[in-house]
Length: 201
Image 1 (cartoon, rainbow, N blue to C red):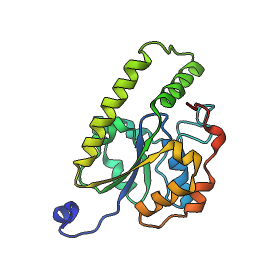
Image 2: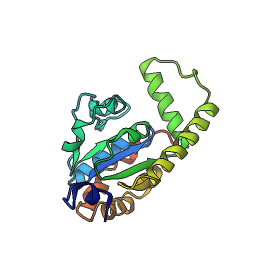
Image 3: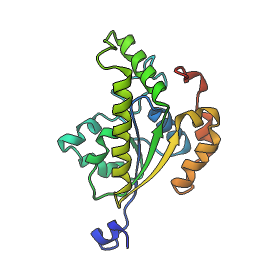
């Protein structure tokens, strides 16, 4: 008997699909793929598309308050997708089932992309060295992956951003299988835009 069946006496619930990863790891791209495949996103469209993310950020501002206890919105995310950065995953309420699509990208590309975003905003890029950030990312990701592995109500699929850009249909099919073969994989693959792969390493 699953965790939720024990909790609710066998009453079925819908899964929340979470797209996660480090900032600039391809989470917005995956959200767009899921939407194209037929899975509606939870987003308020407050953060508009810009030069760094011309296809849109697919963000929901209340997600940023998870660590402050703002979790009531999660009930409405059942049967939908929502983007949650890796640092906030541990604050998701435990009384739901989650399928997490965790985006991975080469660390040097994430650093380059984040740095370019800071440059466009006129913000300093030398507050922390690349070496320190790389070490932090590695430590953080290891902790997050351990946490995900230990959650009885969480299933996780790791997807490479770089692989999606190279051959989008294969990862789209993989994601579709993970989510129960209910999406349109061809449509998911069709919205991947290789021209947005600008920080190649």
